[in-house]
Length: 430
Ligand SMILES: *Cc1c(COP(=O)(O)O)cnc(C)c1O
Image 1 (cartoon, rainbow, N blue to C red):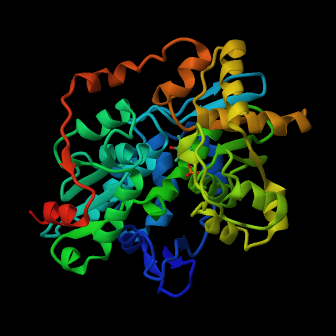
Image 2 (cartoon, protein in one colour):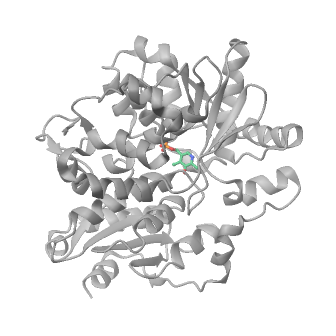
């Protein structure tokens, strides 16, 4: 499989090169040259396939011969070694829980797959690869856990001091091994600016091999298709589901659309957005106009310019009429998000996180117009990650899952860093 740049000014490359490069030299996102088709046998065997076998069969055509079969099977098995249950919430709505991984959010799968691919590709390299990443909270934890203990890879995470939640900070700073957390005396924009400057500094990159673990990387984007297949394994109604995806950068939704283009039966997709609704607006008006991001309570979706939207347009050859037959967009306010968390907990005993609540509300709206349809939302994070939003709404604390209690006992290790590029450069070269 070859990948071409959506800006079409860089040559096509294979999975290995695309994983290492992240973005094309012309600034474009990489896109697969062909969309593999699921065979009838594969779809028939779906309910009985193990998660690891399923992951291998879906990912193999994308990886091609850049990773030998036995290695790729190991990578797939390690990527999906936690459950993805489809839990009924109402008679017509279920939640696909994607928060049972190590950092309690769906980004774990993409981060685990990408880290292991990069670990394989860096084998035999004399110098370790350094993954440099800035985080406002969630991405850093998923990337750090994904790369933990992967030989040949060092991870350096920059996070803004005092501006991530206590749980997020523990997930960044208690790992040790090949993970270092730099605690920047500044905000997220400072962290991001420092990382960008490092990638542009030839005098640094000639002495230390740097890679990003950015969400536009094909090795992080493509494995997100697996969620939709895991859901279909558990889907029992005869009619294919309506699937509501809480969307920010639109990587997750685009992966679902890709699985559908490969032949996965899906009734309809919903792009569930918060007030940052450039994608939903495009679906309504056929005009894609990025905006400045505004802050909401579903903050992982506070994206004004969704970078993966170009991949959706490419998948549908920029035909708005075709896209809007399969995909509806909704913009959900913070007030409706909060009311949904409170109502679903009170009436159904099911606790949504703010991102899942956006998707639940949008799905309910859609289903109101289609009384015979049923579907599920992607519950992308565990509610315990957003206590400041959720706890006042339900009037009680949210319990930390037992699997995470160990975090509370671990000592925090971070390296304080002034928000200056010289400070970062000196640290990286020391
Ligand atoms: C990243 C994230 C999203 C948005 O996913 P995209 O692929 O960027 O659209 C939704 N929910 C949570 C909890 C996230 O961390």
